[in-house]
Structures are given as structure tokens and as C-alpha cells.
Amino acid sequence: MVKSIPTYPEFAPLSLEMARELAPHLVSLPDGISEYSFAGLYLFRNRYGYRVSVKDDFLVISGTRDGLRFFITPCCATGMDTVAELFESHDYWKLISPAFLSKNGAAMLAAGYEAVDDRDNYDYLYARTDLATLSGKKFHKKKNHVNSFENTYPVFSLKPLDGTTRADALAVLEAWVSHEENPANTDYAAAKEALELLGHFAMTGQVLYVDEFPVAWTLAETVADGKMVAVHFEKARIDFRGAYQYINYAFARSLPESVEYINREQDLGDEGMRQAKMTYRPVGFVEKYKVIKKI
Image 1 (cartoon, rainbow, N blue to C red):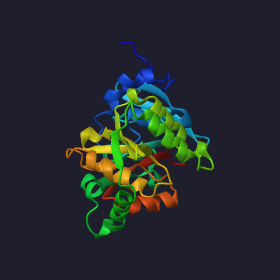
Image 2 (spheres, rainbow, N blue to C red):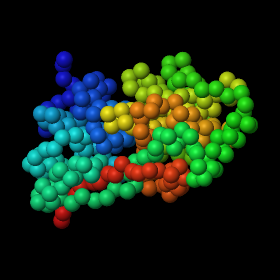
Image 3 (cartoon, rainbow, N blue to C red):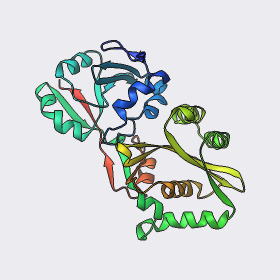
Image 4 (spheres, rainbow, N blue to C red):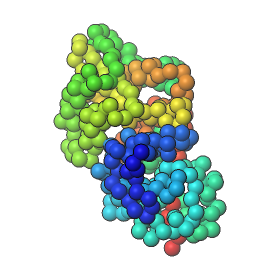
């Protein structure tokens, strides 16, 4: 197999051709960080300008955000010499898990680096059984939304999100984005590309219909060795009340019992999104840290 990822210190833009090489680095990662999947990286490659390099089995991904350069290392420990080289051209190291810190924190500290809590990027974790049943007082309001949807729209159905239903999901996406003031600041472009390139990613999802009219969809990917599912995209028409709550509920019910947790990704510091995610009662978080060089 011809390698498409250059050897460190050379970097190349992230491309579809890199999927087969990147998969072994990502598929068995235990922490469940939502960004650490090929789809999670590729679909946001333009937003962050991702470039990739590999040194032996050590994968390095470089990116830029808000005028600052960062690098991420999805797996494996590395010597502080390589980290020092990367810090010469980057401002910080991001998406560091607690497990990685526990193994490498002492060496980082000794080398003059500091780990900083990155709360805005914590992934929200929910028990699959909670979202699939919405039982108990704490989910009373959510279950009411689901019941109301079923009563208001008695003729509804669910279909797998695949090549035959992709156009319907795209229609929902266009309806959703028509209400956004600044689509460039949303995940619209990534969601659209995810649907257009559906066959290139190991993702599954559902489309929700009312009287055969598409009103919502969700698209997710299995992570953390199959124990967790990360929901990358979830969109609904706002003129169908309860559509968001119902697609969330229905998708959780469709998952196998081997899935313990549903990862609904981060709030990015948006207070409204944070409150909305908390109303579903997360059972925990996938914590993330960034590492900076001490002054």
C-alpha cells in the first residue's frame, strides 16, 4: 500500500486517501474523545486547516484556530524532544485526555509544560439506557416532549440514514440552516459534506418522517472500542415541535445493548448549548486538556 501520510517532520493536508492509514491510530482509543475519529477530523479539516504527519507509530495533526497554531496527538506517548520541536512552530497542544496525562504528566511538567483544563471542549456523556427510556422524574419534561410529538404527529416513521434517504436529510439540513444568521459559524458545511460522502465513513443514523415528510435526522459513529457512540450531527425542522427530542430518543433506542454511553460532544463555551446539554442529565464527561509552554 502506497503511503499518503508523510514522515515527520513533513506534513500534508488531511485527505480521504489517508483514511486507511489513520484508522489503526484511532479505532481502539479508549477515552472516547469525539474528535478522534476519521470523520471527526476530516469533516472539519477546512475549519482547522488540518495537516498530518507520522513518526514511527506516532501520529501528529497540526491545525490553526483564531490565529493560533496547535497540534494534537491522538495516540501513543512520545519523547519530549519531538514535543519541543513541535512547540517551536505551534502555540499549544490540545485534546489531551486524563489517561494520557496520567502517563506523561510528570515528564511534561519536568520539561516545562503545563496542562490547562479545557472545559469548553469537554464531551458530554449520557447513559444509553437513560436516553432510550427517559424514565423517572428527572426526565419527565423530555418524555412529555416525546409523548407530545407522538400525539401531535401520529403518522410518523423512522428510516436508516443511507443512500436512499440522504436527499431527505439534506432537505432537513437546508431547512435548518435557513434560520441561522451566520451559517459559516455553524457545522452546516461539515454536516452537508458528511451526507454527501456518507459511504466513506463508518457512521450510522436515522431520518425521522411525519406523513413521509422528513423532519429530523441524526448521524453518529462508534468510538471507544464499541462501548460508546459519538453523535456528530443532529438536525431538525423547527416547525415540527418535539422533533429534536424524538430523534434523540429514537436513535438511543435503536442502539445495541453493547453501547454503554452516548457522547453528544462539546458545548464550545456556548451557555445556551451548555444548559440544553445539561437538561439531559449527563452521567459524566470526556475531559480534555491543552498543554502550554510555561513562560
